[in-house]
Amino acid sequence: MWQQKQVFLLTLSMLITGSFSLSVTVSSTISVSRGQDAILGCYFSHSRQQTYSGLITVSWLARDSNTQPLLICEVRNDSREGLSDCSASRLKHSLSGDPRRADVSLRIRNVALTDNGTYFCKVKLDGSKTSQKATHLYVNAGPEILSLSVLETTSDSAPSRLQCKVEGNPLPKVVWLSASRRKVEDQVETFPSGLYQVTSSVPYLKEEVLTCRAESRLGEAEMTYPPSLNETLIISLTVSGLILLLLAGLTVCCLNNRAPAEASPVDGNTEVDENDTEVQLVYTTVNVTPTSTPAGLKNSDPEEAGECDAVLTNRTENSFTEPRFKKNENETV
Image 1: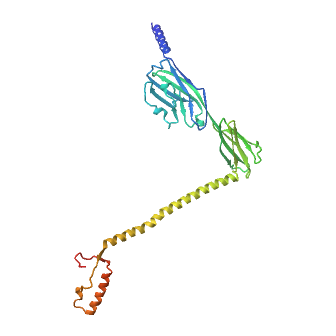
Image 2: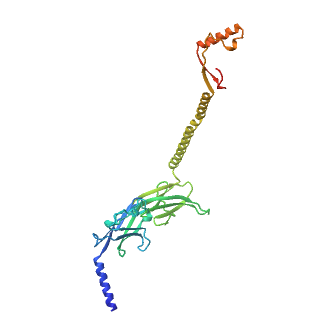
Image 3: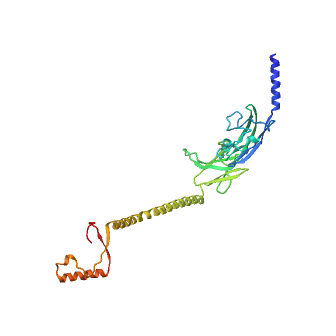
């Protein structure tokens, strides 16, 4: 009885599985140069593509199908909402397609050598039906010299060594050249120092000129030690020019700020003087006729009175306005 029940359930499960098939298709290998954006194509299809309205869950994993996903996106097939959480431009990993159109391709922005490897595209429908496929991202990186320096030794018997560290994918080959551009092969030590790095060194004597050259099918790069006079001169001139520009900018800025500061006190004093003059001075027009005699001269000497009349007459003929300080509102003018 128990065996018959198990067979029935297995048959039913096969019938259900056969009526709802799901398949995923990916690009086998994607090759991209370092610094560019990579798109790993992934597309899915199932038998209920036209009528399915359930949840679509997309997962992308790196290097191991059982590791923590680097991207998870969920959307209902009948939803009209955007995919802002899955396709934001600020994200390192995002979807370049739309799951509702069966496109769940992955975009990796500004790829580096550390992005090189295998990726797994996983699609789940109805919370149970799952399918996944693996694709490989190959990041091309031309040879690059990371450092070139002398390693000093504490022993007088052991000579110093010139060490060169290079990087690239495929892994570059290191070649040493003398000042005459001849290959140096004596006592060369080369060993890997990382997945995409190689370190090489040769004995070095003071005042000797050696060149480290890194080669691969993507090109070559080289660096000379000690730096040539032209390179040193260019660096010195560049630094000096930047310093001069900075000093010139500071000088102009100080002069511009100083000019208004020096002019402002003069303007301020002028305004204060003008205001004080307007408030403290009262302008009165004096008109005196030659026939009138001032009250203070009635008992004075006639000759002195005549002299005063003459002065007052002259002022009357040249009618003028003179300022005076106002001491009392009832003062007689």
